[in-house]
Image 1 (spheres, helix red, strand yellow):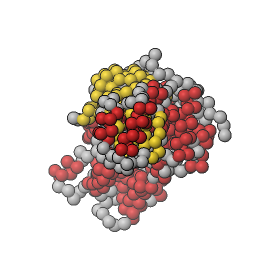
Image 2 (cartoon, rainbow over the protein chains, first blue to last red):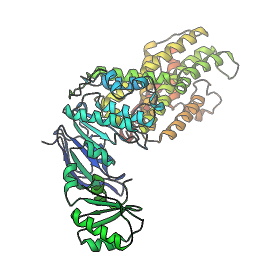
Image 3 (cartoon, rainbow over the protein chains, first blue to last red):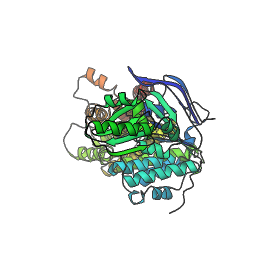
Length: 308
Length: 254
């Protein structure tokens, strides 16, 4: 049985439909990533699953129970709310790192060792620093520690690496990998493709409150042909190239002067692109073929332009 | 570095431990906060000391017998109402209430813990103010039991009012309004300044304020040593019930 099962979930704020008929499942001892732009409905979904918010309709089952107002679930779940922007990560501003982690630990029957957890997230030297004096990245790390200190069997991490530097990001990833290895079910949200690609067993792509694709990163990126990329002068007539390649082809100028061709066999694409460029007296630079990245899939599903 | 065993081992600590640890944290934060200390400790103490000695207001004699019950009422108001409203308002804004409510502590545990912290701070305030009162010539008389019961009832009424404000207004609005109400009630409740200059009609109306009822009740219990009249009890009880019902109805956690 899935650890989290969401079926036709709906939630509106006034006239805004934040979540609009969303369904997915998160399997036990696996990492499920909900991927989407800001405003796609990720946070609302996670908060409903974590029992922080009621839903308008649909069914949500977490560890076999309805999460809304269910105190029996609380010891079994760890929650890291989204902090970016809102500043509402849920910690007393004047509380010190060590004491707030000890407080959360004291609510649990068999908590993790506070000192070891501080060590693991490189927070030991900040143990006596109040929350409000921490940097954004330090707050994120403490917030993650608070979510896991009670040794829950399921953790909800809402954008766990937002605002982290490279080292802290890797420390967070490594902790999430260890959680999974230890048998913890992880449901996280992200808009970082590399994060989903690296961590997730299962990716749920969300746009406008609905699931637009779901599967393992490998399955999502394997689906068709592959990608041919090249650089050239900006503003080439991509519609013309599409006509040459055939109706299945998708040609995009990903960023000025950077082109991607998808939807046709790589060999055909490569030959056509080279010939087409030669006709125009354009030299295609850094011509490459490869599997589509999760980012290509994401952009194809949610419209052009980089995710916010 | 100690190895972390991340294997799930879910379970809640016993309810007593959860609440005790949370209450201790709340109390530590209250005592660490300079503005809170100003409201809860410094202002009541300074008012008591200054007004006993300074010929500022037309305070009935013996001045200490009038002032000590008044500043005790002020102390209860500062901690249960003003301090709690401001702290809780910002905790709501920062998501603390929602996050703690989602831990094994839970929402009811959170409220019980906050109440315990308020009562613990009040114990410190009362001890300090009684000691200062005795030092400036106050002779405690009357019924300690009645005074204790009035403080408890007043705490319920002011806590409910503070939580009502914190749970419905924006944090900044709560900060401003809670301080304004504190100041207004200090002046017009007969806490430190007698209400004799007001017309009888206004005086009667002001006596319906929770702060006035608590000050009147404590004065009756501790000064005259007399039987506390029914009105302060009734006024405080009505405030307590009404504000608690409103807070239960309108309080928003996030």
